[in-house]
Length: 125
Image (cartoon, rainbow, N blue to C red):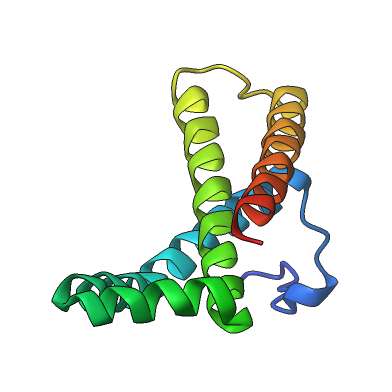
């Protein structure tokens, strides 16, 4: 089969619609959460190992900028991932599957996620 259709493999030249960007971001936050589990499991193990370990983790989360930033990033990723996951579940119920509905659901998920990211930042910092 000899196809004469053009092939565009340069993703930087493709303009993705908003629902596609939110779907891609949902996958990216899933990967971030998976990688972040290593940090969370380490902190959990360390904090349960001894009273000194608990104090060390508590001190790191209270005074270390990098630890706070990682925690804020993980909470932000979790918030977005949950909101986008609920959006996908709603769309599985055939709600908002039109072009216009997809745009509105994507905008709503971004707006809710921004609120959650700000709230996570306030809580961590």
